[in-house]
Length: 531
Image (cartoon, rainbow, N blue to C red):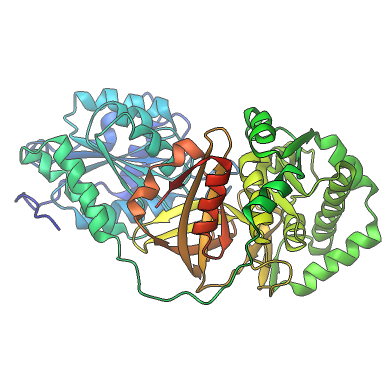
């Protein structure tokens, strides 16, 4: 670790909780806290004159969230109270960074960040820490664009969509920021300490380089553990491509990538059929109630635990959803279905989440894919024919403290080795973001190599990395299933592709690096090593 320049050690940032919540959080009009936007934006950072002249760097600590108590269904989940996390991070940084004057504030979006920047110009702020607490709060963009030295930090399983996707794009234009994605607050504190470089005459480039070097140094080296034996039957590439050309994908509701549909057909040979929620709803209403109750009872008896409201009624709705999906597949003679599940459920078009139904389809050798994501759906179709195994579509989270990428979603197969393989335990909980319906926490097997990829017909590229499955992360933030995997290769490279390929990835059990490379070559796609 590089040595920091000598700086005074007294702390000038002792803002207590009451003052922060009344003043610092009052910078945002959307906040339900006492002070209005009409009060001075600089209140959160007010310091005695002696502290202002101390020579310590003055750093604005921006907590970026939609609201102190979450008012919408997104990560980490509706109703989440950020107060404890704000207190934890604020107090930890004050304790660990006495050489830095921290000026806490809230930003609920771009407008708040721009107002902070305007106020801070006259207030001698040296740099920024943006602590991303919700996925898509776009406070970091104007701050990074200002050119001020900045650290972007991820509150894992809360801000973890925006952090990789936003920063990967920003890094192509701006070189004034570094990223911290770690479950260890000391990693953030070490980066914040680096602001002292600026007061010692260092440049922004030197500050960023020091933070980046620190992240690499504090990321553990790959372990020497040997993965469990897992032979995979690989079909020939010719057979795989021929099967893809016979495949059909049904997308229910508005798709995530409308512009991909023609490319999927012309480049991969997979036919995409679009239908609306009305077709699903009609089959849902016609679904055999006795058959639905029988399936619901099987799910109930097999689950390790269940934590949902109205267990029998909710599971029956999920089972009717499964029967409706099967009917849609049969009508269109398709092997894969993807549903705009969030839009369908939030809009009242679907009476149940499709999560349990997707598990049933995946375990039977079919494809059920989330969120109308065509790109991930065709990835799952291709790999189904290449390996005979189901994919786990997820929203990944990076944790450098553990050298992990954590694949998170509210649905995952319970037969990751294929229809003839063993089943793993699972739990039934609510869909995480809105705490409604029924979703799945699949407790996936550990000790195996996994391969994660995304086939992009628009870019004509296949993005791929590998990681060893090491734990099922149990954390009541974000999606229910969270498979923690130790990254194989260069973890730093994992920070670079999210703006180009999107957040979703699809994970498979097995070391499939070489077969995926062969598939890319046969399709004349570029094979991109993500790590």
